[in-house]
Amino acid sequence: MTEVMQTLVLIKPDGVARNLIGEIVSRCEAKGYVVRELKSIHASRELLEQHYAEHVGKPFYEPLVEFMLSGAIVAIRLEGHRVIEGFRSLAGATDPTVAAPGTIRGDLGRDWGLKVQQNLVHGSDSPESAARELALWF
Ligand code: UDP
Ligand code: MG
Image (cartoon, rainbow, N blue to C red; front, top):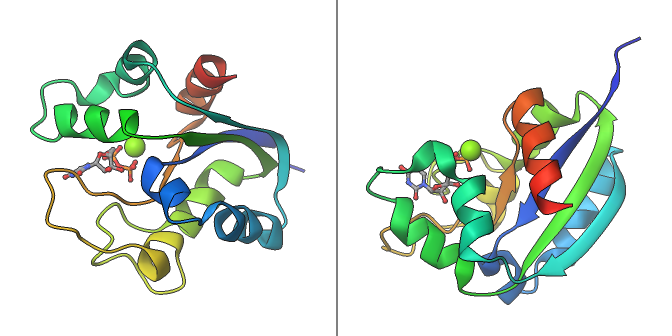
């Protein structure tokens, strides 16, 4: 039996603005994962700079922070066995144009011609990232 894991899921400002909170939470629940905590927040620049520290200096970094500051974000503590990789699978590839149909980004996202991909969700990419990010947001 593997350990029960938790991951940080964020519904980014585009997902909130497009009224996709229910659709995205529904996909997590339908998969079988459990929502342990959920809140809507306007993130501060400080929080986002810590959250995306690995991307400092990349061309999309400042547009990404500005995008994440542009509206409300829904933060979710999602739980289940192998939920970190499982949610990344539900989310699909970073680029919504090529994200597989059936995934959140593939079904619901598209390229809007902007400096940053507005791709609806964030999901932690490792146990270390999940622990770090959950401590930042909750
Ligand atoms: N991003 C982008 N262009 C890129 C890489 C990333 O616009 O070439 C944005 C996109 O919104 C992505 C976020 O920056 O979700 C964080 O990038 P990461 O590589 O961590 O992708 P993710 O883990 O979200 O799939
Ligand atoms: Mg990432």
